[in-house]
Length: 237
Image 1 (tube, rainbow, N blue to C red):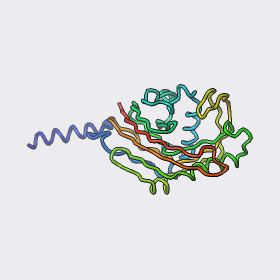
Image 2 (image 1 turned 180 degrees about the vertical axis):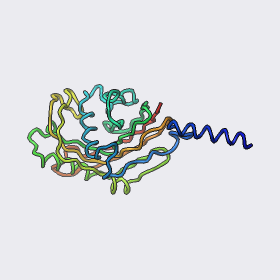
Image 3 (image 1 turned 30 degrees about the horizontal axis):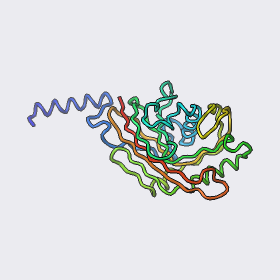
Image 4 (image 1 turned 180 degrees about the horizontal axis):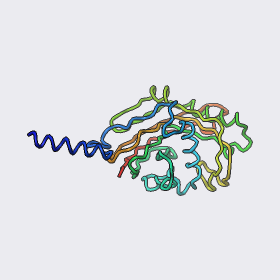
């Protein structure tokens, strides 16, 4: 490469970086925040509360959770002030979704998750809700996450990213909502599971693949077994 061309290439790269772009944007991994940090000014637990309030606030027939293509991935998020864009779990089995996300947004990824509310246990005490959520995630027997070219296996995820959430308020659970809830309204809930939050997206395409499974045994279990395998193509533009 001659000196003039080399200098032009370097100048172009610096110009891209000055606008927040990278020549390989979207082609490699995204870093993820460690548990115990405060991504975008909120604790992991608060992000998880916000995720569940978003998820249960959308009726089942419009909910991204039951979406098989990614067509509905932006429902309830397009006018949000949140710094994170919520990816979702599914109803079990495999899902492949294509989703467009604005550059500068981070991704919230629920690798394995559970919410137990008084919609599930109408007479459940706070202790019952927390015990049921814990029992569900105590039964998790596989975890996997791949972001771009970076993989996270069971041992790493299990040791670093489980985040139980104490009792919290859900102001609005949608009528005809997820998990078979027919009559919505306010409720109390507890959550548990494995969640990660990424750094902001640059322009480009990203592949996010995560899966988990579990077998819950005992009187506290509301669901005995579950498996999900979800792959997203994220287009940040």
